[in-house]
Amino acid sequence: MKSPAAPPLDEPRKFEIDEMFFSTTDRRGVIQLGNEIFVRVSGYSEAQLIGSAHNIIRHPDMPRAAFRLVWSRLLAGQPVVAYVKNCAADGRYYWVVALITPIAGGFLSIRFKPAASLHDVVQKAYADMRAAERALEGESDGGRRGMDAADEILAAALRAYGCADYETFMRVVLHQELRGRDEQLQREGRRIIPLWPTDALPAGPAGKNGRVPARGLRRRTPGHLAILPRRATRPVPSRFRGPKRPGFRLCPIASLPAR
Ligand SMILES: Cc1cc2nc3c(=O)[nH]c(=O)nc-3n(C[C@H](O)[C@H](O)[C@H](O)COP(=O)(O)O)c2cc1C
Image (cartoon, rainbow, N blue to C red; front, side, top):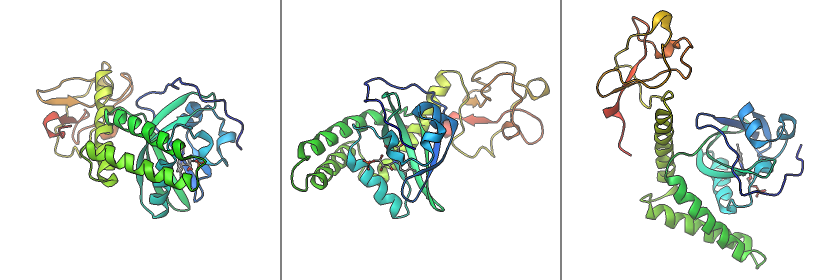
């Protein structure tokens, strides 16, 4: 059930690059399920979130046109990718990349922290979109006209970035964001997630008893990065092991696409 949120603060709510949120809603956008990351970062309790409309975390800086686009795709049975600025219960904001898709009886949203420079482009576009919407508020048919004007602003910003339409933009966002996320994990010496099927890749040697001796990313052979589990002392999960002997699979750097 919804409780009054604190007024928005110009302060970010922190969460980690490898933390993934999810929530599901019914067909009207009422929250049915979520994970503990959503609960923690939103600042609401599970009891407050479940049964509330998903706009419980709506941030006033978000253009209305962005949600019109989200809903028009979802109700047409199509998935949608969007950057969303959310408002936590304490008023602090947090940005996410959201991939929302129709599922049986409603919708599923998977969200993670933006890490690509495209996010900056979209933040600027959203600010302009919201300003255009606000300028028309209170006028006759101002809500719809404001969203139409905001649509134009977004389309122009995406074209300027080289994305002919929103479909293209969504693919670029996913590509860049997953790359950006991997690169940040790599800089922090944490595991990276292989982007491609790794069937053809060689398996490297494992530490004793399938344990990895030290934490972080290792260069195993020239041009290859080892994919390590996050914690040094955990056994290497079977999916990282080679077919014959335990180890971790190696991902050739050259096989990754240019940004
Ligand atoms: C699965 C799903 C996830 C959503 N996630 C968010 C979200 O994280 N933040 C948000 O503001 N709106 C989210 N929405 C959209 C809200 O339902 C709502 O349209 C939006 O907050 C705008 O609210 P308003 O119509 O009251 O302005 C989500 C909708 C669905 C179906």
